[in-house]
Amino acid sequence: MFRGDIGRRGQTPFAITRTAPRVVFRHQTGQPIFGSPAVDSQGNVYVGSLDGTVLALTRTGQLRWQHPLQRVFSSPAITAASVLIGSDDDYLVSLDRITGTTQWRFRLGPCETGPGLGPDTVRCDADSSVLVAPDGAIFVGGDALYALTPAGKLRWRAELGGHAFSSPTMAPDGTLFIGTQANTVVAIGPDGSRRWEFRTAGDVDTTAALADPSTLVVGADDGLVYCLATADGAVRWTHNTRRPVRSSAAVYRDTALVGSDSGQLLALALKDGTVRWRHEAGGPVRSSPTVDPAGVVVFGSQDGALRALDHEGKVLWTVVLSAQIDSSVAVASDGTLWVGADDGTLYGLR
Image 1: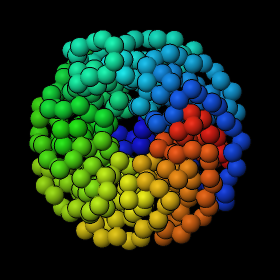
Image 2: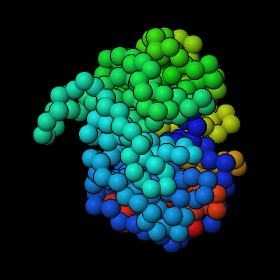
Image 3: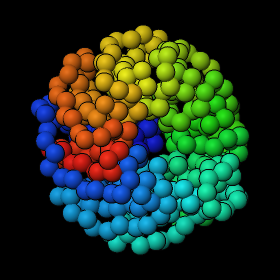
Image 4: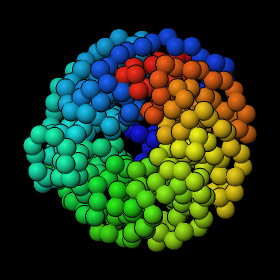
């Protein structure tokens, strides 16, 4: 699922190449790919597009199936049998992983339906990427935070006070954390009860990273990266990037890696937020970094470049694609890097 696990740490178990890859696969959609691809254990890749489709490709880039939705900003979550993904039609859908046929649909809301965009229709958009818990329970944000059974039946609905573009993060005790466009980070208990709320000075569209069971790292449109205590939302430290933060943090050992519209990728010490190193990209970094077991991190930026750095911030390679990159990189077991771009292309690099 998006950011790899229920803690949303942006970690991959597979090695990221230390030498520059080349583009070996391209699949064109009709609109930009904002969400991040997901790869299953067989190397098949799944992704949604703003053209209103979600599609599945083989490990060699051949189209397996394509399913029509509406605009897709979210990233798919993959189970043994299903692909779970939401879109701007206010529905979360479960699709058969092999055929792409609909297994069930769950409507967020209630919200007004009708042509065009407006406060109601935007509020219920299923922009949040699904979290699948170890027991199979499904969690997704929208106008509220929803808990569903594996069969798509409602368990509970927790009011958030604003639309959630952010995706839920789960602690080992089952507590859920999610950002909102009401300038808050909200903690919800396993039973749907509100634990705490932390207020920022801007939208929280990023997905929080659980650095450890007691520590949460999340960025906001006020330009700040926040380190919060999971128990009560108390601030441990902040770092001001001076531009909106729409890149979700990755965690490598005792370091948080996060991009900013300032055009930087920052490595911040989890202990106190001090800058360990920074890398200047050529444009805003909204792509969320992906990090491997050796600390190699790969990310895109709006200058159209995909970059890999080592754990000390040294550039290992740069590959320039043909459009801005807001999507995050998914790493397959064979080392293939999959990423979407604003030219509507899903790229496979090896």
